[in-house]
Length: 93
Image 1: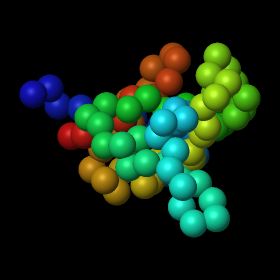
Image 2: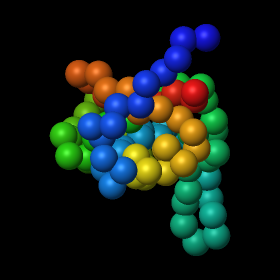
Image 3: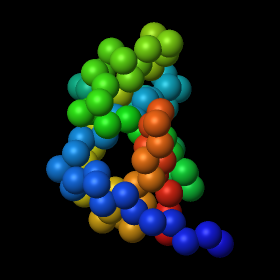
Image 4: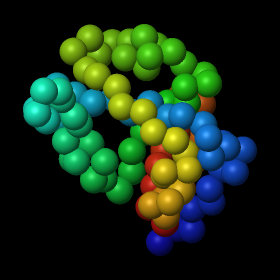
């Protein structure tokens, strides 16, 4: 398997957006939360909040929602942040 290199230019306190489809949103008491299936994947694209607004992250996906979390949380799960022009790719190492 190819060795993945974490992009350390993405600081730990950077906040990332992940789009969530309507079928991945579950009731949680008086509110809603994303299903765990949003995060159970070998690769996941996210957007840097320093580069896009919530509206831009949802452009073309009118019924979707957003979740946000920090790059540090990603790294604590032993995943890598791989930057590209369009989005970030989170991949397990």
